[in-house]
Image (tube, rainbow, N blue to C red):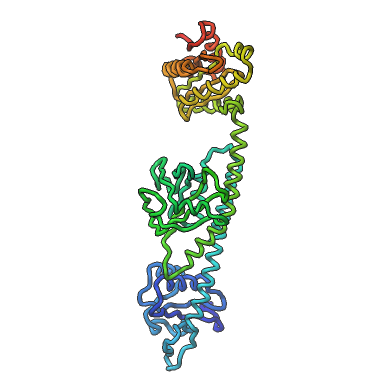
Length: 450
């Protein structure tokens, strides 16, 4: 069976124009290679200096690249695409080959490339929108800022993206996350310049382009980008405004298509990102309210139990220590009975605020009930936990309430694995030690003796 195309098929020989830029030529040739069908095929190319990309694609599709039509076997093409004004090319009989205007072929190829570019944006946009569905299961631990940077960078094919927060009154910008992660140093910050501020306060516009030197960043990251896009995540102004810094790839002057695709993707993503940001902020607010005690803003009982469960599993799997402090405000019932519940609430808030200020970010701190609180200390041995408890005694003891005067607490300590081996015994032992501290005179720490 003869594998050659039927006689009525247009088999096109594409001749490279002399003045055409390499980038535009590569785009046209690769597009024509991809769209060949039963009616028209790109059969061969005349190109004295083909790029590596063209050579690879041509080799995959079996399309010969030659320097002159005489190098091709007879019958390998039926038409020639020549630039306007170029002389005809003659066949072996001296007759001109049927020609097609190269400008017409180039126009069709670039229109198809633009359509393919839009389809590529659409497919990336679909993946981008799908990634934002991770906002729904908030019980799954993830970084919202990191998710946005990764998703938007992929959608835009950008060199880098950074999630920032501008504190308008302090005129400072903090970088919360970036992709790549190493784009900025940890906890990077820079001054809020007037150029960035103007973009953040623009009405009815989400983003604008800026010279990187006008961002205020002291040490600009090496992204290879000539400009930076400031992309705000909310339209209304506020004391703290979240926004993105986007570093686009360099766009070739000869081919405006990539820049158009970038701008189109930005326009598509803007309202979606604003909606997702508002949704996440609202759901995060509701989640915080559901997990924290309304008076003290520390963990409530359910969240405290969940924290202890997680800390216990981590301690067992890593074979690391875990300490728990049970804390009770001394003579609190007397305060409520004599000074009223409002003063009691003020003391509870003051005590929890003092204690919270001394803890690590990895520690758990919650309200167990009434005037009782629990501190969970992952990776802390018993001896260290006792020292921490004694430091907390001094911290609370230094307090003075204008009506109640001095305040003290009593603390019971329990440790895994030194004191116990079962999770259910952890709270029970700490509560028992708290009772011992109160029975011993209050304002003291009690722990199980060997």
